[in-house]
Image (cartoon, rainbow, N blue to C red; front, side, top):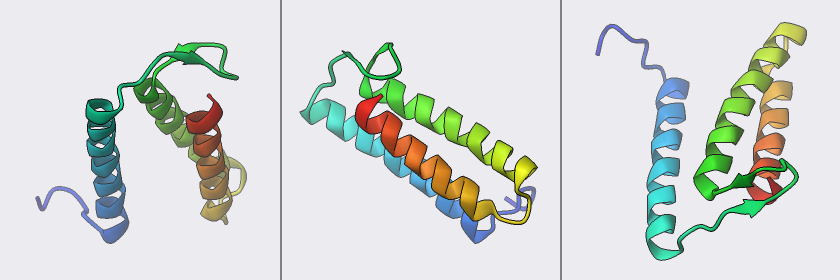
Length: 90
């Protein structure tokens, strides 16, 4: 794998995504999800909300890097807060 820069943050990111997917599979096996309507005004399942939160946090990070290039932490905090909001009440 010399073609890709596997630095520690990259490994942590992909390991977290893999752990999230494994957790979703285990949750679905033991506690099947039901579609529900939250503040997003869509009937979504647990997997839908995870996908929406992952996609939107990527855009939040891109916006934060464009507007505040000196601090990636602001975008990270905003992205985590948004993901929790979408996963809990989305």
